[in-house]
Amino acid sequence: MLKETWLSPPNRIIWIKAFRERAEVVTIRDGRKFKLRYSTQTIFGEKKEMVYVSPLRDVEFCPAGWFRLEKVTDNLWLTETFSEPRGESIYQVLLREFIKTGYAGVDVKEEWPALEDRQSATLRQGFSSAILAAGQAGRKLEVRTIEGRVYLYRIPKDKYTNE
Image 1 (tube, rainbow, N blue to C red):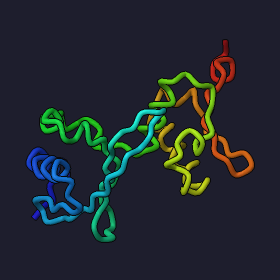
Image 2: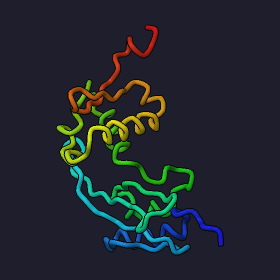
Image 3: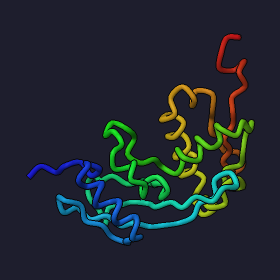
């Protein structure tokens, strides 16, 4: 039997029910099982309820990622077009929030205390991947590690254009 995509419309019905009930484990239609971990993340001073979805067992490849509960418990999530992104990493969420602020730069652990337990290399890789995923908006950003601390910076306009 071919595995259907984990966020197919029929599977989304299973997911939304699990999210609403705050289930700890969910089994989708093809039998794959995922664990769900809920937490509150502070993103630029605003608390957001999040859920992290990951495979229950180690597998060769299986999707994982952070979702905002506000979005994935709303009935509109059931009808989103399937070509839309299927979950974002926490780094993508935080990077988008950083872009909106207009800040020149931040120490990521100071800005987001929930990241305090993560290693610098992990933070650097996560934000570097998020910058690549951001496309044109990411072209104006960079991640730097200075004395073991990880920083997000906006690149000054004269550094990324010929102006």
